[in-house]
Image 1 (cartoon, helix red, strand yellow):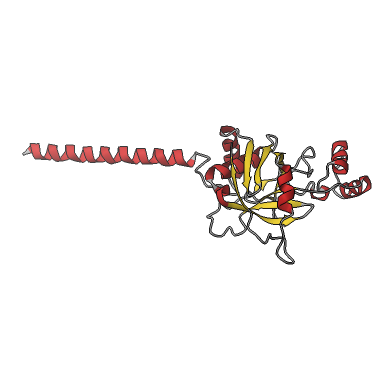
Image 2 (cartoon, helix red, strand yellow; image 1 turned 60 degrees about the horizontal axis):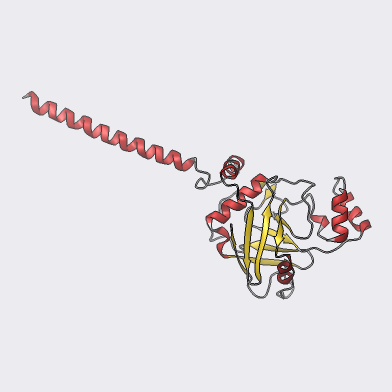
Length: 242
């Protein structure tokens, strides 16, 4: 009479043990997923922590931008670690596999990303600004865009400076309004190579073009839709890590 009861009790113990092990495995898997910066969903609350960890695990700093005109190569600054990490993370996630240069302001910038982001399932976060006087809007600078009311950079929209050459008095006048000291390097660059000085200290410059700067000029010369900054013809791009 006792045997069936013992057997039943043993079976119950086995079932409990099995589900305990299963639950432990599932919990471990969830924990691993939640601590992987490549998989965790970034929010305004964890953006610094996730990007810092991702940047430490992914040291890439050279990118290739494939365009209809050829390949533009850029170097990302290690001194803007959050912007570098966010950009590399999105490249690895495939966000820039089918992007566009969708905005052109001749003699200023060409802007890339996705014009319509509603279908992309994007994470809702901004990158805290990493503005540094050493990185300014010279010709070929790579920077992140943001909305006027934003407190950080948009991770999804970047631009490359085409720029133009400025007179010294113009550069000094523009810089005076920023409240920051004008560096000799800035003054020399804007009066010889060119750039867009009035964007300084408003947007984070996080890299620069190292090959294919002439392609930026070609893209900036594309015809625009009437009374807009949008090119008539699509300019598809794909960004990869070479």
